[in-house]
Length: 525
Image (spheres, rainbow, N blue to C red):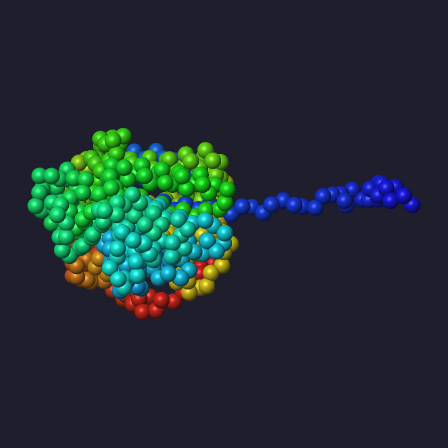
């Protein structure tokens, strides 16, 4: 029989749908992930959280399109440990010798190369990974003195990032330069960089020697080499062509971030963006100077909002917003005076950076560790405000579960998969406790109970709105403290004598957690 007739007969006699084309639909693309981490931003610093002298329309929009957690925490009340915990899923205080402090600009890398970090895990899953902005996790191996004129490694590229455009530490620490991948860009070999945190190796004036040259007065710690009219922590010589300009930092972060997103829009990417604001020294770019009613600190928070808005605008323009998870938070709570006399206290104008919570950056009180925490994923996250507890250390396990990437249980020992919480699939508080770290030691929040052991040197750094108020400026915690945050969210009454059994139970649990870095039991949703 004619083959063509056989084929036609088959078509006519076949049941409906039996010869339909095979399903060749593509699997859902993995979501892009952007984590934006502000520096020293408080839980009360956004207008969506109650601020009136500071306006944050872009952050408000982000919150209105996602979930805003009112019980979001940084793992530490200081920067380096929080950033370490976010990328490793491990509390930084477990690695005390390496990272339980604020690193200088020439400190060695505190995350060992080869570790399965969050960016490395995502890279193994096909993501392109990048970090732009503040780094503050060290560079080099610590075996030899870090040479900023050569290759700076190990660094971000050795712990899971494919691209890096960073500043080594804080803006108030030398060296005041950018680092792209392994090198300082725009460096003139005839003007090499020399850095010291011990001796003044520079011929340039310091803030102590020439306070008349400063655009902001500074305390002794911040009165090293003057760069751009601002004295820094430490001493720097050379590298003049490579030095950043404070009033261009935010624009550079935006430009590099937009450029990166445009370059990798056709593949899944993970991007960590470290903003510099409102950390000191506070310098507002011209469009934002004088725009708030809370002085320069308010102005640079407007700058934070603009940067977030530009990132969101880029995602909209490239039609990437729907398939991009944005996490916005801060590495620790707020601080007003922190080394520079910029009128941050005098110009506060009634604003409450910590939303009325007790304490500031450096301290284990709520004001030091409770931070803004917003997650947006259009179509996947129902817009809402949640009082469920979440910690930056949970980014690791939560994002891994969302993208379907498995990892050894030991890789992120303190990270919980809170994807059911983030995606709104449960009303339960899956994280029932969190350990908080500050200059003076550790504290434990479990449910609504908060236990703070006695310690020395728990404060005395920086100041709040009222430095004479013992709640903000206590240099020590002479006796253990217990608070019930449900009844006393501002930690005003120490009730340890009323509930000694509860305090003893929490003290024992904190001691157990400290001694045993066990993988946490994953809660059931």
